[in-house]
Image 1: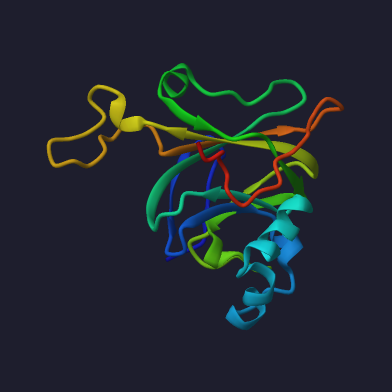
Image 2: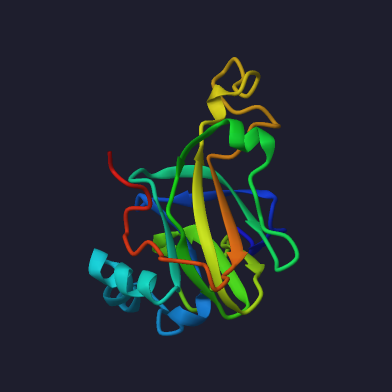
Length: 186
């Protein structure tokens, strides 16, 4: 696989074998260089929570392995990132906002690929430095007519599984979610 830099707002396929995707800041994980250094930083929930509280990690905790379509949409001071009308019509779950503290680069991958130097195949994109509010949406893309082909695969214009909206924090932002479980269990 090659490095994968994406244009925010474009869907990307992201894979995990650990049941969790993550939006993360590589600068915050400079000490993670191999599996031995990954374990004390990210193996246990308490380790992940430390990074969530610091704004370095936004979990997309799906409790399932696989390949998922994810769109990350960036907002700005001039215009906040929002769901499209199609996405809004098929939202299944929405997280509370998480803090994302950007050092200028964001990555999206399975949690097992979080490191100081993004692995080949990691989705990466520029994000303005500073604090941002990240909200994760699960999209029930299969509910949209025409989104599933006869063989059960998504059509070319099917919505993604997840949309992450990343907007600059404002004085009114927060409180932030501080949990590894992205969505309330109901």
